[in-house]
Amino acid sequence: MKKLNIFFILILPIFFSLDVLAEEVNLYSARKEHLIKPLMDLFEKETGIKVNIITAKASQLHERIVREGNNSPADVLLTNDVGNLWKASNINLFQEINSDFLSKRINSKYRDPNNRWFGLSLRARIIVYSLNRVSPNELKGYKYLSDPRFKKRILIRSSSNIYNQSLIAHMIAKYGEEFTENWAKNFVNNFARDPAGGDRDQIKAVAAGLGDIAVVNSYYIIKMLNSDNKNLFNNLGIYFPRDKDMGVHINISGAGLLSNAPNPINGKKLIEFLASDKAQKIYSFTNFEYPVVKNIEVPNTLKYIGNFKEDSVEISEYGRLANKAIKLADRVGWK
Image (cartoon, rainbow, N blue to C red; front, side, top):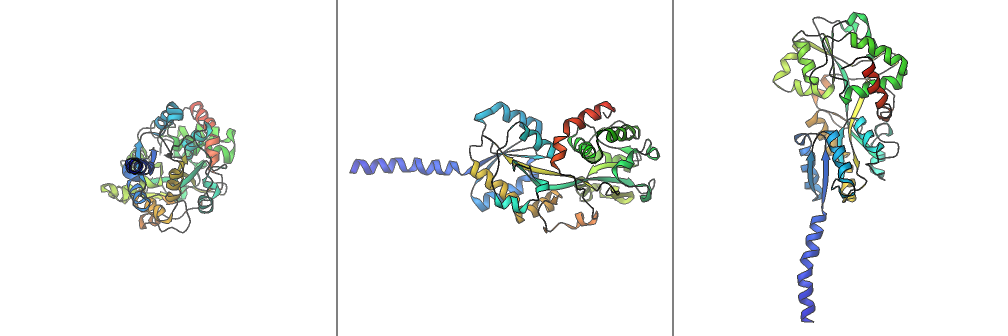
């Protein structure tokens, strides 16, 4: 009996240590760590589950997960843009998540039809324009940006950027491929310069007089308004594109549970947490994105840039049409 007691004394710490080790989740994030750290800190505090974070570009993380195969330690992939989520699900990197909580809180428009990924925050692709050189009456929907009146006046980043690929895919879904290609040809002819830099660079270029109109994501505007660059907006206006056919182009950041996740229960808990009221408020107040869940408080700076009417096209269409969008951009010379 004494020997048996000694055995249990020796073996119990091993069981306890294994249990402690199991309380973790491995997150591969295409979002920078400082943007998601407040969310992960709160999740760890509330659940006791440690979050191990690896950050890199979305394409690098996709390649890494494929390369690691069945031995991948990744539980959750968090990334920008539905195009990246679609690519991951299309090569079966994600498994279906059965969650009444997520299904009730996140509109079907913002999640995969088979529940393999879920949108967690929203951003709008909108217009910043010079108050001195552009009349608000000139601005309508995205399709009007191909109008000859905007010759050499438009600034936008490269078509290799997935934000623009999703915008083109949205246009294809809305208007058809032929119309969108003709639109894109004329749109490219209206560029003030060859695409260069990120969204902040386009805004700075309008302020410097290098162009009159920039197409950018909404949260970059808010970040600049909350920084030393806020004075740039003394002579800049903000416009949400709309016309009788198409509302504002909305995209998401989101997450999926990896097919080979070693900690699938904790991975599901993390994604559910990111859809909670507390997490949604952090997304809004820290990252300046729109909550994907309704009736969440937003900061005054988001209210300041105005209200908008979102377009009706299902967001998953951006991913489905992504390859067509890329080829179309190449054909029209959108660098």
